[in-house]
Image (cartoon, rainbow, N blue to C red; front, side, top):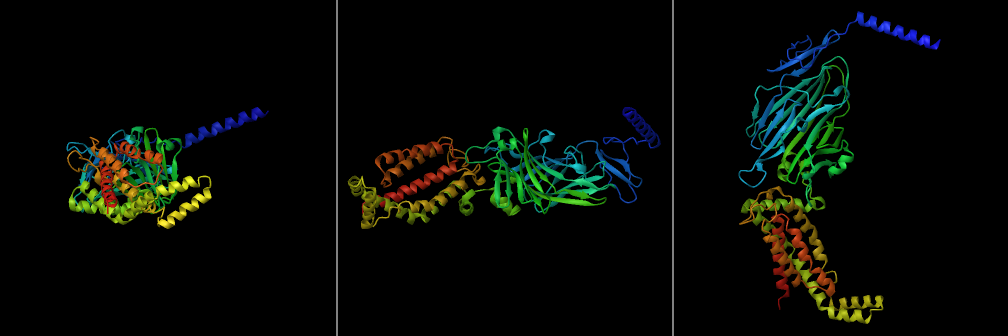
Length: 538
């Protein structure tokens, strides 16, 4: 009986469905890729006339509000150029296909190719593509109408021009991406607007993707970093790509910017206002994506939502980044020593503006720092020399009270007081200088100004190692001489072990940038001079 009733119910449902289909036949949809479709406008609004090779498709929703879907017959490319970069944008995804820096070459050779921050490749490698969720589910492969006739935009200094891409899907979601460029730098703005041109409420998120190709050969060496970087609150965050392969990294609305950096260059987006609810950094096979998710948005018919971004594709130069947005300069992260490193960077630039040679500027900066710390260093070496003179008496005390540690310590302290020697006098002045030394190390290690900057003779690039290892070997020799001249109160066995340091440092510095080795070499020479003055007979 139960099976019979079920069969009757299914039969009635089938009859009702057939009758409904006969009375209300379905409309045959017009294919989205039909280039022969004719554009129409309703009385309430005018649909923009497409350019050559572009067409629109009309699909009615209800009786009074047609939904217009953009269909483009071919992909267009538009070249944007100023004195600083040449960029190629594609109508496919309204995306950035190529971005070349006109003032930076890959190597120091005059015929070397220019640095490319976005290289032409497969369509999935293009950047600044949009996708979304729910009713905002657009695709990075959607072909947009382009609101310019020309295939190129050239900007003179002081000039500003815009490039607009437009796409409407069959649900009435109109996406407009407007890039605005200026003739004076590496930055440009991107305004993304979503408008509901249909009759139904549209809900969802838009996601703007900053895309970067990746393979393990791009991993940076010791002391440098290549990979995703973000400023969250006031903290710079860098991501290990191997960790991203396991799980994505997510930051909330306190994110200031997110992008991708190498030793000398940066690609980044700064969300403006409330454009972004979260940023998710993911690894998808051989690409990395910084996904900028808009807040969840609900658009009533006729409503429009706007999301703004400031984009930067250029050098990691503090001065240039500051002119774009001071927050971007935080990408040049000196770590714990930033408060000292940033002023040192400006002093280095100041010297260069007068001498025109960064090698000479490094020497001048090293001399200035040495002079500033000369009194402290003098006091340190004098204290060490005094401690060295006490060694015979201290040896006797240690031998006499070797079985009574408490008495041993009292006798040694009494000796210090009698001879007016501070056992910490040799250490404290040196400790005070350590932050400055490390800050200068940071400045010289990743300063883009040293990239391809010549010094003299065989040193034609201060940002790479000495090709003949001459300066590291001289540096090691000066370090050995310096140690031989330095007064010490160490045990003889410890002193011999300490003498291995010049050898260790020499091997370390063989592959260090020539600019950093130059600083260390000059500092050693000045220290030898100071020790000679202290050690010479009165």
